[in-house]
Length: 157
Picture 1 (tube, rainbow, N blue to C red):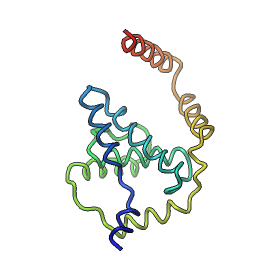
Picture 2 (cartoon, rainbow, N blue to C red):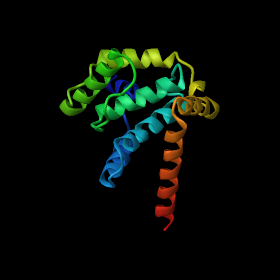
Picture 3 (tube, rainbow, N blue to C red):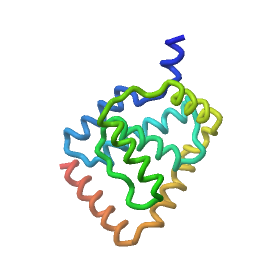
């Protein structure tokens, strides 16, 4: 019974936490560290461990896990008060390492198992990325592209 319960509780893999710690040691931003958790979440959904209603939800779950694992990710600038409270609560949970309620955990997994796994297909993620990019200004997108080019040049040298 205990073995089954351990399998049902999806928490970040040790390898994901290790990758995030490696990113932190390299001096990478909290967003990059959290990206490891988002990537892990997408892999879980694609494997069929559980689903998500949308690509946005999959990303949100990954960011929540990152905060709970101790990544110093600030709450979002945009969004409602409830979203900001949830981010704050996740950050607090990341500091305390209190045990997670087994009942709550099981309910979360049960609900996510009913959701589709197609929400993180490559086309769905592409649509999400495009929609997110459209909300940003041309100057912001251009600055990101220049920064990426500098990073690529630095890494190739």
